[in-house]
Image (cartoon, rainbow, N blue to C red):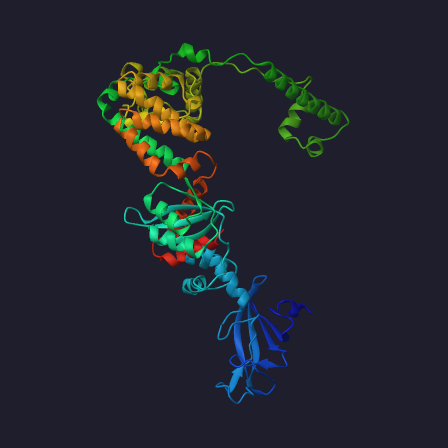
Length: 550
């Protein structure tokens, strides 16, 4: 019964012998079919011509490779009109004609190749005791695989770089199932149109604002609702705002932004008196914890005293209590409970070097190992832990988070310079959500508005469109387009004209919640798979791995 469990199909095969070796398990099996069917004329026959043995690799059993010696028969075809006189019996559920591995082994190898790739898949199968070369995996990966998804109702379209800046393809994602539907080798309108005509039934298409995708979607699925991606709408707005701010880049550089709290903390100087105030008196929680620990030590002391008065040796008490022998000896020989001595602050080995450390800290050197190297050159013989503890007190005195990354050079307050305000950075501040901005950021935006009259007009107009997109306020879109079209700002008029040309998709974008966010996530996965393949695989393998790997 046990060997039969290893068979790929117990209804068509029977085990004759089993041979167990160190690394292999060999099964001699035979077919139990009484009638065979000709693969050409499909006529049944029972006339046997001859027999021969096929060697097949199968899935491993425990830690042993399994090899099948399959005894099959050749039959005469009884159809006189059939061009094939002799044929070999077929076992379609077990093995394909002329194959050297069972169908279930080939399926497992194909799935491993699609998930992990050729080289990585080879190493994985070696660990699983399924030897196969990279070339075998590549051949299996290129075999036809069943389709994993039907035509989606909501389709997301975006491009991906086969070679950045040179050649691009198109990725299609089912936004409802969050699953890649197909990968196309180009990003042209004709490619999208052809795919949509071959896959009717798409009702909603989310896309960027590229003209090729808009044209292809219109021709390929004229009845589908097109939705412009929210991120691309905000990007178009940001580009228009950058062009406006670019005319005033010199004035932007003259604005002085307030440093953030970390920069202010870095710029401030620190003294030994400030550090002395860092260590507050023990809190009630700390005092309570100390009392609990004292009670635990008292209980262990009384237990040791009881055992010792009963005449037990120190070794026996150690075995009974599980305490260290030195602790048992101290408790046994003590006339009364030994209280812990308060630490005497006689000074630290670091004290002579603290003034120098404070000086270097205020100069901007925060790297603990650099400071350790400098004070060791002056004679310091201690370790790094004491130094890190002292630097931690400095951080706490300045209100700097303990996990802030160390920097090697920091300017004092009289030399502290904020980053120059560029048009891109100004756009980021203007289009950011107000609740995520700090007071100094809001003050900086107000300074930008006061620079020029056109900026005072552009900033509220841009912020209003950002609110329309984020809050899905579709009823305000037409009013905003009219204001932008009538403004004196050429980039805003151009943006309004562009949105008018794609009005239906823009209107749908601010009316629905569909976006290309999931598509961007699959593009990141596609990039990871492409880098795994080292750029040496063709488009067909990338497509298969993206479609059929989890």
